[in-house]
Amino acid sequence: MQFRAVKGTNDILPDEVRRWQRVEQTFRSAMALAGFSEVRTPILEHKNLFVRSTGETSEIVEKQMFELTRGDDVLVLRPEGTPGAARAYLTNSVQAQEPVSRWYYIGAMFRAEQPQRGRYRQFHQAGCELYGDPSPTCDAEFLDLLHGFLKSLGIIDVTVAVNSIGGLESRAAYRQALTDHLRPRAETLSDHAKRRLEDNPLRILDSKDPRDRAAVADAPSILDSLNDEDRAHWAAVLRGLDALGTPYTVSPGLVRGLDYYTRTVFEIQSSMGGLGSQNTLIAGGRYDNLLKSLGGPPIPAVGCGMGLERILLALGETPVARPAVCFIAPLGERATLSGLLLARELRERGVVSVLDARGNSMKSMLRRADGLDARVCIVIGETEVDQCQVQIKDLAAHTQEQAARVDAAARVLEIFATPPALGSNH
Ligand code: ATP
Ligand code: MG
Image 1 (cartoon, rainbow, N blue to C red):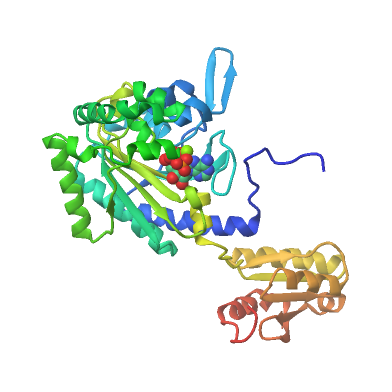
Image 2 (tube, helix red, strand yellow):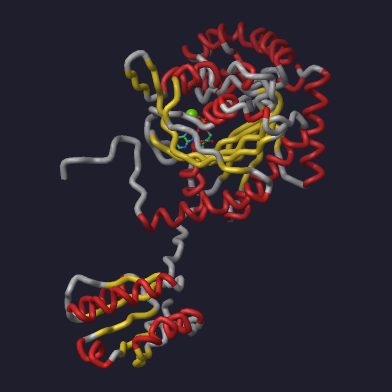
């Protein structure tokens, strides 16, 4: 074979796609029940969108974007969903149509990272965004919704880590406090953190380097730098979570790597699936300054993104059954044409039907029916065509009957409506 899939990308084959669809459908219903509607935005965006939103010093913008240049346009494959959704919101002046919007998305994202379990170059995120509501109640509702979503999938072993990084004023105060703490320790920091100390010291809290972890271990807490308004907002988020009974852990070191966050930030981790340091399934927070910084009005927002590959890894191998199939095995051309019509008739009545038109032996057709785990197999030979009959095999009950061709579809529907007996392998 000459071609391989591009490094860090995955082919998702049909049995696996069924597992994805289960997660996506669960997500869609959880979102729909909370009044969120799906939005679909382009995979290609202007590079500047991410420089302005995600931030010049973020890991994503510094080194992870796939860039394409065409004429004067510098484009990238979107590395995350929030900036594109915010841009679409502003481009279409959605705020002029409704005061509050609840959006969700599902789609492929691209980051040039070193591939490993739970970390790919093309991966998929589901995410949700809520525009126009600054209230702490939203943040609590949001977190509870995400927690409930994971629970409904069966991911129960989770930690909901929450923190507040305040607004611009609180952050400036904390930046000073953190810089004062780190300056005397500057020599012990990683090279990357040494640079961050000048341009974005909060990012050092997010570093995975053990030297940086040691230097920030006894750093002051950002919660102590919150001004009165930020502190009140934070307290109200926790009251909301307490009222809902959503389990959470306050994590003062949690700052998230992206520039646009304000006030509430969170991560939901799971110990399931052996994900190691890739165990953050969902990450997000409030970003009340993002829309303004993209040139729009000052519209508050809260949002999150979750890695679908990681959620599937956390779920482990849980195969999702294929739909029950009616298999049609004809012998000869006249039988095949009769089977072709019957397959269409069955589909019109909602039965999944597969006609074997290869012209192979009955034995090989039955083997294929078996491979498809078919519930019913309809055999049509020359004699059946002459007599306007078909043979119907109930593969679960191991019985066979003859039926008039005109009654075949109705009879198949009856069999499909009967649950297979216990002990059969269907
Ligand atoms: P990490 O610290 O693991 O690199 P991140 O902070 O870069 O994550 P976000 O940008 O917040 O991640 O993205 C939200 C979620 O998307 C992550 O929590 C994770 O589930 C998923 N994710 C991010 N990058 C990847 C990737 N390269 N491959 C697979 N999933 C990813
Ligand atoms: Mg990352």
